[in-house]
Amino acid sequence: MNTKEVATKVENRVTAGLRGASWDPALLPAGLQSRVVQLATGDGAQVVGCLHSLGGESTALVIMHPRELLLTHYMVPHAVAAGYACWVQGARSVGNDIRLEHEVALHDVAAGIAFLREAGFRRIVLLGNSGGAALFAFYIAQSEAGSGDRIARTPGGRPTKLDTVELARVDGLICLAPHPGQGKLLQNMIDPSVIDESDPFSTDPALDPFSATNGFELPPRGASYATDFVERYRAAQERRVARIDARARTLIAERMAERKRINGGETGDPRRAAYSGVFQVWRTNADLRCYDLSLAPSDRRWGTVWGADPYASNLGSVGFARVCTPESWLSTWSGLSSNASFDRCGAAISQPVLMIGYSGDNTVFPGDLEAIFATIASTDKQSHSVRGNHHGQPLERDERPGQEIAAGIILDWLGEKIR
Image 1: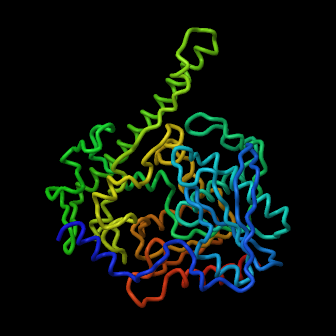
Image 2: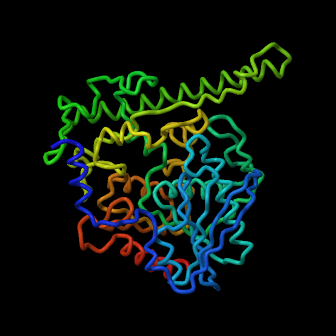
Image 3: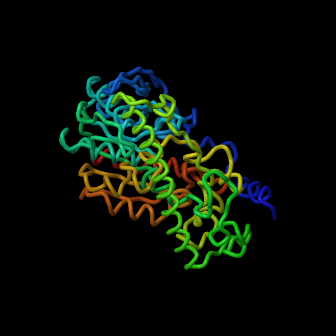
């Protein structure tokens, strides 16, 4: 069976016509009002958000992802019908890894929360789906710190200006299919067999995850990686991230050194002083757990969130961290340098927390969820597992969608903890 046949077989196992993270229009309550609002952030940018409501609500859920615009998120109809407004915050960096720095994204979160407070909402709960969960954990960590104790500079060295804005406190956090943070996620996924970052096909055979010698095999049997290979692979993933970190810091240092020369009156090259050093990162989707289902056992299907063709997901034009600046890499995609991760932010979370993981998720695995939950300091926290894939879609035909089950858990929790 070739990879195309595998992809077709896997996709046919689930219900046709699924909408990913988007809502089912049939579930929208009568009288729903959706209002698009343009906001100015504390650092002078313009962002938009959308308020979904029936009117008269006192509690608002905030939904945001640092890289995606979740305007029609599947939880909106359930929440609004139950009497909660939903604010879907747009980030300035939607679909744009080149520009995404998480410290900057906090200004976008803050602008939305300030709008909701001014609009009269008494309770505000953050609902972080996937990468939105770590972003919100980062926001909470910074909002709990005094302005003088907030992170002053991004990992790339830019001033964050977080000491100049109000980061209003929130009343609760819902983590839906959360991953540990964009950087930690990528470190688990990145292909460490790459030898030369300028050559997408350069490969160290001893670390190749798609080599039969190392245990790779297509379904129906699937891969079987030896424990020593997994250990070497994980260590090599960290080394590759560290190499890219070093490259990013070198590019920044060279640019800043040239600017310093020019600003000091020396002869310099203004082109080098302006050069941002945009670079590509190939082969970023090769988590061994996606192909060896005996690693971190769960209900997941063979393959990745991008599909069942391992070569297309690892080398295709669409992928995590495919195009970055040095600053966006260090702030967002580096598992070693990014500040936006639960292991760095969880200790600051004291609000009530609800975490829901999907049992068939091939992006977030059981051990990841356990580790995230352990980092959260709140003594009022719950964790639930619901059958479904990363977006809560059914794993089998005619199965009740995990989205609906998760919605019921969320509404019960809101009724108990927030109202």
